[in-house]
Image 1 (cartoon, rainbow, N blue to C red):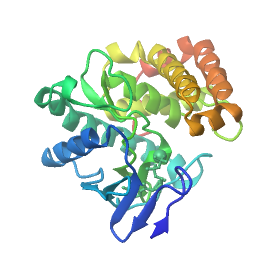
Image 2 (image 1 turned 120 degrees about the horizontal axis):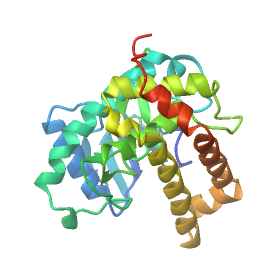
Image 3 (image 1 turned 180 degrees about the horizontal axis):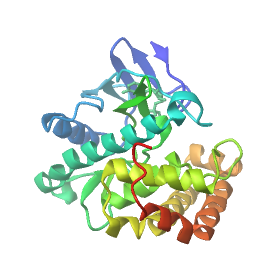
Length: 264
Ligand SMILES: Nc1ncnc2c1ncn2[C@@H]1O[C@H](COP(=O)(O)OP(=O)(O)O)[C@@H](O)[C@H]1O
Ligand SMILES: [Mg+2]
């Protein structure tokens, strides 16, 4: 068994073509979702292989290279960004029929659902949760924050992470102009409607706030990972990012609604 880096320490392992990750209360729902999207022709996510009886879920290994912040090299290219957006669109479209097939009451999700439940959001569609072949985004991993919600809810968080509208010196890249252009390129490649673009910045601040609230809730329930996140000041970085995005809301929205910059 080989321990994998880039996620929780000492908890994610690979043996040949199989990945072993800690099982959650929601893992059966996620496995059902992963089978469903594969049947609908979406093959860029792991295949589920059940549970090992030692507290782990088993998933197929997705080929490709995985990166993390700071965004440098292939993961920072326009190609990685726009192919990630197109892949998210295909995933969302494949996920929507899952919600009509199963009643939401029978499903256990890691995060609360939000109306209107258009798709199953990935919930953490950041550069560290995709795999690349060259500079092309070809795989999606880590569905442990998936939950039904509007498309724009997932895109808001993805754009926040990919633009990236992050102010911490470790995660930051570019300036408000280049970040807004990347945000628009993501929306163009996804095919996001203007009606959603108008509310995207508000959805972004709501989504980051929901994450901060979730961190505090989990920490007060004794979740060690979130207790450490708060000790390390992650919630302060998110709050600073909310302020940054709020200040620039008119500018970002204007760019999002402007002429296409896709392929530039
Ligand atoms: N199905 C998979 N295929 C390929 N690599 C994977 C897969 N699942 C996880 N990994 C690798 O393991 C690392 C951590 O996995 P991840 O599931 O994101 O952990 P966490 O849930 O702790 O964030 C990823 O960065 C990636 O390199
Ligand atoms: Mg991860």
